[in-house]
Image 1 (cartoon, rainbow, N blue to C red):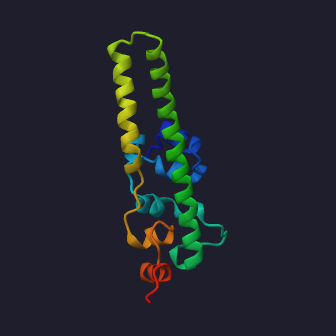
Image 2: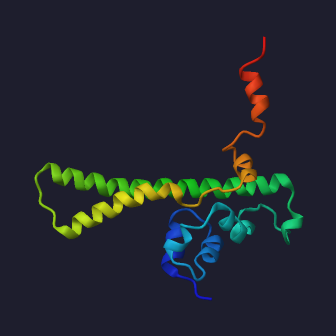
Image 3: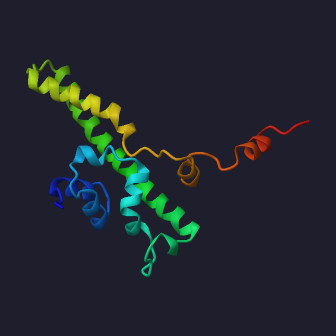
Length: 156
């Protein structure tokens, strides 16, 4: 198996640990990595987000350790998305600034700007959390929606 060094470097620049970046870049280009779901990334790299030295497999993890390791990975992924979004936004802002001064762009530069706009629209689809269990564990969904609802709107 061949590690794609550009993909590994990009992942490390975005905040992934070296081992996790190496695992994700194994026979995958950047376009393939960013289309993985959260669960697929976690299944490949969970060992790099656990704080225990003696962990040998899934059976050694407690529920709290698994939840905290998922949260660590989720935070890294969200931070990476924000970094990428800022980079694309800066490129578009630079384009708008130049356009304001009446600079003329060729077709190639216009295509690059449109590609950046399309990437911004797609960033939300990267590393989607797809299971209800993980949505609850990461705090995206409340764990007991009915109980929360009754506290907010008590019956009279």
